[in-house]
Image (tube, rainbow, N blue to C red; front, side):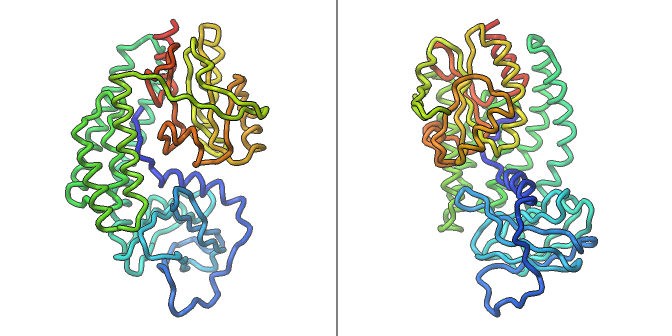
Length: 396
């Protein structure tokens, strides 16, 4: 599976936005008078068929998502307001079943305007007044052409017996061939616009589908170039620091792959309020799993982990789950709902400030690390058929 270490926050915002529609009861009218001087951008939308729908504008900042505007749309033309003109990533949700409109606005954005129609606004919108938003729109449209192909290959990998390594390798070779096309697209944009926030999003395309083993270490130069150029263009922005953190994570994982060392120990509170240590599981093969109750991809992967735990637990396999929840009731409810029957569940209930996540430089979830019986990290971010194949290789 493509190792997207660079967090694709657009997708994270989509998940948050879809979940947030049912919780947002503070709808505001679009008829109120606005101040003469506004601190941020006024986004004008003209979306055919939008009257009567709900709209939300969500921003990513401080490594969190925040709803900054929400309205019941009175007519097809409406406006939404940001609270700054500094660089931010946004998604606009129009209608509960629609894919989002993606916006990247900065000081150079001038009267950002969106046109399109429902249904299908996420695929047919046009944005003017924001070059960065236009770059991202073109990028997402480019990726869409490959999505169905990639999903079909992943489905075939999932249904292929894990011991049929020749067939699985052929599937990954096909994915890599597409991945390299996406890589060329990203590099062309990065080289032409290294200070572009869209280039930051495109860094994810530098990872081959089959993972870090085929990662070209020379591509680290692109990461540094984007971070440096963005730092110069947006000296206040947190985004360059996130890129540098991801560079450190990539370099650490590459070092770990070629020079395995003991996994850092985690000592954290379990479900019963007792201290639990990762190192107490030495002698077993351990899947160290960073997840959260609110993480949709994590919850989707849980049935597969449960199945593999039941299949290999008697052969020396277990799971050590570190939750990035900040609400104990939500955490425990998700454990019960997903039938996560292994005993090793811990959390300090600090969300993204989790000490365990910081220790392993986890910046997006799900994130997993596979430890051998000696406590050494032997692989990372294995899911589905990849994890099953690795466990069969180790445990038979």
